[in-house]
Image (cartoon, rainbow, N blue to C red; front, side, top):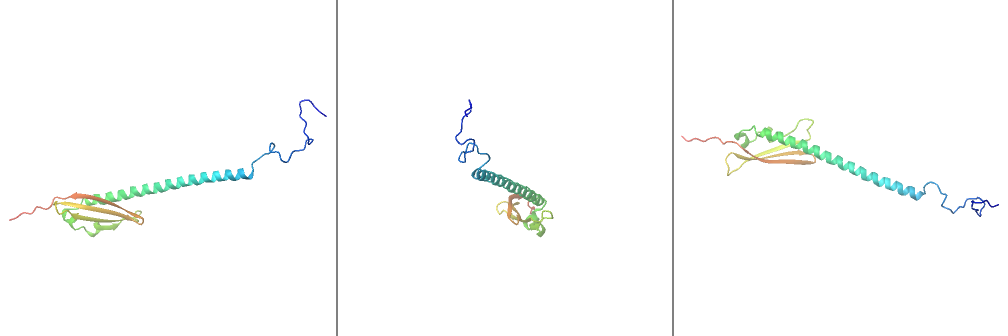
Length: 148
């Protein structure tokens, strides 16, 4: 029987097996592609976070080492001309106290031959995976030599 406004189907209301028009949900391929996209995005995000953490660690280490080198350099300012010529053992090398005991230092002081009272000072801060070196010059008024 024909009803106006309603199309007739040939299979009398049975669904067609080959028709994609009435399909619901995702295919297996779509799910795999979606998981791959999420995985790649996650890997990129984790790499960015890891890179930020390594950068933060390098910045923390740089701040610590610069502060330690500055403290050793300030200590060198207290030495006399005679002490700069022959550094005491406790000034020449050592290890920092906890919690910075992973760091050690070595200091050298060499008088410049062509300029009296000027010393080339090198301070090396070392740790298991690297080192930081400060090179500077310090001046001490040489002792006056008088002749009789």
